[in-house]
Length: 229
Ligand code: FPP
Image (cartoon, rainbow, N blue to C red; front, side):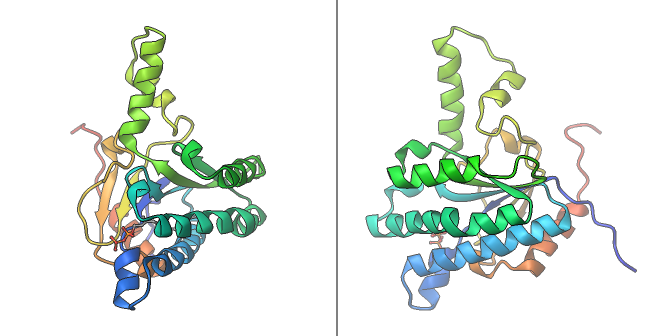
């Protein structure tokens, strides 16, 4: 008998393990990121087919900016490729791309591609791939606090939520982290207040459809009480 799964509206993923995946194959880290991008594209398709509405992926953290220039350039090239080629497939499937994070620190041509990619997304999209690029939750919250200070304004919790990059998105129901580490690493700290967490040792390039389904099944079996009894 087919099980009926409870599908999370918003899944957020810390795509960890690309570097180790490449190292095991005696290849440069960039090779792992390229495999990671392919895994991410496949994961978006799978998430959409299962009825997820928002898939947020941690593609570049504020802390990742201190990585060697060569690795960063490799990541920028992947972003370029994503926004020149892959987004078109996304649009054709009726999906949109969004970005959270401070993209002003990215190379100007990358910023322009991102802005264009977000702007050209279908207006009636029902599935959103949200790329976290130069994203850090502490920087995001600090930005909101500074906005309030500059206007001498007190903030409610709802006000803070509205001042975050994710203002028009639901909080993640499920956060997945691949690669074996058991932490959030500055990802969606405010929004994760009641998220279910799922950790797996699988390195992100190996995180395939079956792995994604396994995470959704685990979520489906959780009892979400949001602090109530
Ligand atoms: C962490 O693995 C992963 C990243 C820093 C980058 C993730 C990026 C992608 C999957 C490609 C994203 C797509 C676009 C459009 C840019 P790690 O390198 O820290 O792995 P390690 O812990 O094994 O060293």
